Image (cartoon, rainbow, N blue to C red; front, side, top):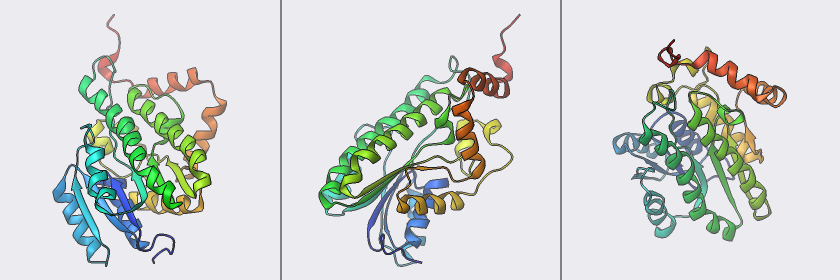
Length: 267
């Protein structure tokens, strides 16, 4: 069913080719939004676009690699620069890397910072002024429950998601007077390609939410003006618990469970 607030408005979703990004695009389309879909894999974007067009939505696909510094400007030029007003910005693209920091691929560590942080700031900075001028807009940043505490062996990933969450919360307060809702979505284990790409199956957990449920709860909460969105109950409990438990204990406990077998010191 279309949502009156979003009917006919344009949404830009990064990382829309899989997982939560695809689910968010579908959910926004169900609520009446038109979509700009971007990711690296154009074949997947085009397949999703065909599906959403069959439902009566207008869809534009843009192949872009957010690890490249010029990519955010390319997205802006193809949308706002071409007369397409983006009222819903979903910064979903992101990646992680599991392993001992001292042996992880350096380029992948730096890519996490560029995609999870730099591109998020760059894209948001490009689109916010137009939203302010129109006095309307919704911005969703996909962070993680990993943003609430350090996570050894996903060290860089958790740090980038902490950045995303605080960036969203600060921006939410700045933009509220202009009628713009900003929220940080903090999902836990979700059906997606993240665990395979990051080689982090041990963080998957026994209970894994569907991307569709995460997306529906995220957009519902964004429209309500909620600023921190944790789409499952145990995630709220964990987020509260880490405020009460010493950080040193949390990092020790996580490291004990997550340490790679080949990372133990040699005697």
